[in-house]
Image 1 (cartoon, rainbow, N blue to C red):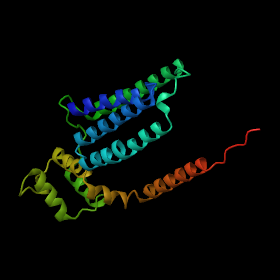
Image 2 (tube, one colour):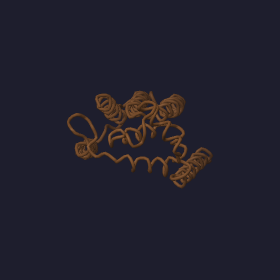
Image 3 (cartoon, one colour):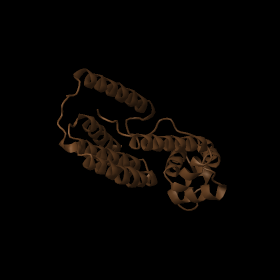
Image 4 (cartoon, rainbow, N blue to C red):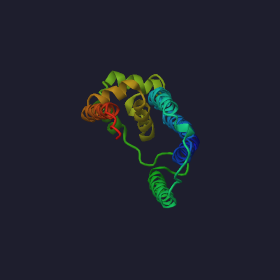
Length: 215
């Protein structure tokens, strides 16, 4: 719980710095810190594979590309000709405060003073979810239970809290993510690929635009 708060605060502060810094290079570095903070949140939630992908893809490859573009376009030497609009900053802070308030109220409804989740799912519901969404058979579920709670532990021995922790532990595994991605969420996955292709076509069209002749 403490790590979630720390990484969350760092992510929020660095995200604000991304839009607050005048130097594009400083904004890019702040965005890298934001990505690393998000990876820390994933680690605190037990999603180690997602955290590794976050670091490799976003904090690594994409941010290196951003920095190269900034250096090639020489954006770091540009003078700040127009300051941030004060009213726009106030609106941004107001929206951020509302979102944080909604998040805090939502967390308070499901977490008690000890940091434990109040709304737990029964073991039967969790096992059925693992079978339907994660495509796990009885042998896989048994292996996961014994790996988490010791050899010889049965499904009938699990409490609602232990069952909820079981499904949370499975969410961060690459095998479970792949099963969800190509079964339940295959349509959004394909739509995302088309969106990326459309963005690539747009970039090519902008780059290949012929310069206007000056008279």
